[in-house]
Length: 441
Image 1: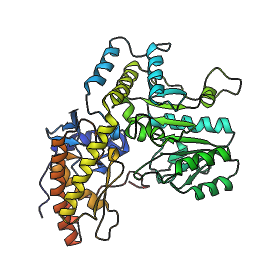
Image 2: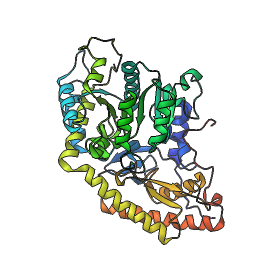
Image 3: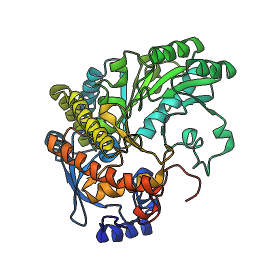
Image 4: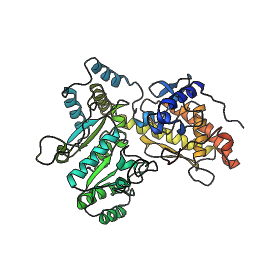
């Protein structure tokens, strides 16, 4: 059976070295080699624009760059130059730098629905800070998370709800409850059942489907009526939905919101933003109990804040969000046409907002399939497309999109053969890819 011979010997050796020293072989589970076909997990040498090169010398058109963080493309000149200027001026001091003033001003001008901001290095820190702050200001112990959204934090209040909850006390898990996206009735029932116990509702304001009409405004009303804090996790929607995130697009203002990923174009920077009266509880200008909100040694590194300012400026001045949408629409149309032309239009399905596309791989019975995902990823890799998702960066051009669609068409032809055989196994050349969240290895 032809499985398109494609080998990565240097990447395989590098992966073995990684596993010998780094648990899981990567510093983010979503980057693990279990997420790729067996022996086909490229280890990256470098990237520029929308392309990356692996240690075996192969070049790929890349999607989902840096887990959606590199939205302007790798080594973006304006961003790297901004960071480079600061490296020669010192990166961390015993007192705040003037860049912290300038970065806060730039952020709040871009996200005018927020009144204060505090920077950190990763998304988990700021979402957990939002939860802690909500508990402090409400005096309530429980956290309500949207159960339809895949990830909020590495911290116990969230990870305890996943299949990888080993090491987290049951008492901690019991303090987190879930509500379904788009269902205001179910959310109100939850708030009523746990009356005066829920500190906050935390969710991604939008995901692979648009919010139902009136949903976000309805959540705002429920939070106000039940006295809990409304938190928007804008790690993904921030900048990709609009420069001001989903709150800027849909016109519903949360009490707190968290940003990251696209904010630094690969540099480590995240942000907690929100109402002044809440945020100031973590400051020095109030008369209540002090809240240990965020205190990070590296949260205000100058080069990362300079990068964030350059990113924000580029988005606003160059209309990056609109470009991401245009590129995504072109890609989605091409993939859907290629899938339909090869008879797999019901099985290779593109979903999501144009700036944040994912794909589903369905089996003969239209059920999600890791085996068919493996086949599809394998064919894409062999054609020079590295695509755990179809999330675009603004560095892509029309030629990149056209080439991607060509490779997708070739992959879909193989997909059709596997469907006709009712068995993708002969095309996998190894074990299937695995979900990130699972109890056993």
